[in-house]
Amino acid sequence: MAASIQPEDVTGPEEVDEAPPPDFSDLRSVLVTSVLNLEPLDVDLYRGTHHWVPITQRLFGGQIVGQALVAAAKSVEEDLHAHSLHCYFVRAGDPKIPVLYQVDRTRNGKSFCVRSVKAIQHGHPILICQASFQKMQTSPLQHQFTMPTVLPPEQLLTREELIEKYLRDPNLVDKYRLGLNKILAQEVPIEIKPVNPPDLFTRQPQDPKQLFWVRARGYIGQSDMKLHCCVAAYISDYSFLGTALLPHLKHSIRFMASLDHSMWFHAPFRSDDWMLYECESPWSGGSRGLVQGRLWRRDGILAVTCAQEGVFRVKDVQPKAKL
Image (cartoon, rainbow, N blue to C red; front, side, top):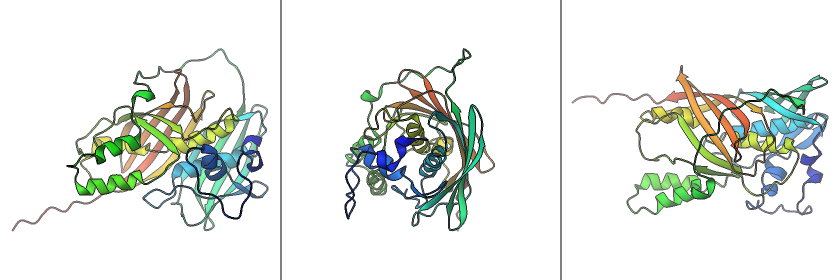
C-alpha cells in the first residue's frame, strides 16, 4: 500500500530525546506524524496513540475511524483506493492507553478487496471496521446531486473567531464565558467555518440541518489519496452527530455517543482544501438519531458521503413539588 503514510516517508525533524510540541501551522506534525501515524508491531498489527481528547474524556471517534482506515490501507496494493467503510463503535475508548489495530485480509479480488479491522483496548474491541478498496475504473454512468449555494469560506468566520466574538460581549453570562473558554482552549487539528452560525445560547428548536466549510489545518499536499481519505475520516466525525439534536434544544442531554459510522468516497479530493460539509438528520426516535452528510469540493464535485447513528439519553426532569 501506501508508501505515502509510512513513517519514514513523512518529512519531519530527526529523532531527538524529547519530541517538540506539535506545531498546528504544519499539519504533518499533527495528523500525519501523530494522529494517523501507526506503529507497526507485527504483520497486520499496529498501535496508535492519541492527540486530542474531547471534554467528554472519551476518545474522539473520528480518530479511531481514521486510524482503522490507515491500518487497513497498509495491507492493500498501491493502485487500490478506499471507496467505502462501515464501522461500529462497541465500547468507549480509554484515552489513557494506546489502541491496537488488528487487520484481517478478508478478501482480495481483481477489482475490489475487503479488509476487516478491530480496534482493541484492554483485550476487547472498541471499534469494528470493514473497509473496501477498488482499482480506479471509468464508467459513462455518472450523476450527482447539486452542491448548495453558500458564501465562500473567505467571507466567513472560523469557529474560534466566532467564540472570540461572543467573549468580547461584556454582558455574556459567566457560565457561558467559562464554557466558551474551555472550547477555545482545545487545539483541534481541524478548521471549521459555519455557514449559518447558530445562536449558542438559544434553546429554541432549529431545523436538523447545518452547513460548514471544513479542512485539515496546515498543508498535506499532493499525497496519495489513501492519506486524504484517512484525514477525511477523522474530519467527518467532528460536530456531525449534534445535527440530530438541533430540533431538541429544549431537552437536557445526559449522554450521547456514536453507534456506527459509514463513508463512501466518490471522487479525488484534498483534505487540506476547504470542503463544504452538508449535514442533515432525517430522523430521530427510540433514543437514537440518524445523520447524513455530504462533503463537497469547492468546484461542486461530490467527494464523500457519510452517515452516522448515535444514541441520546435525556436527563429526567423531576416536577417541582408544590408547597
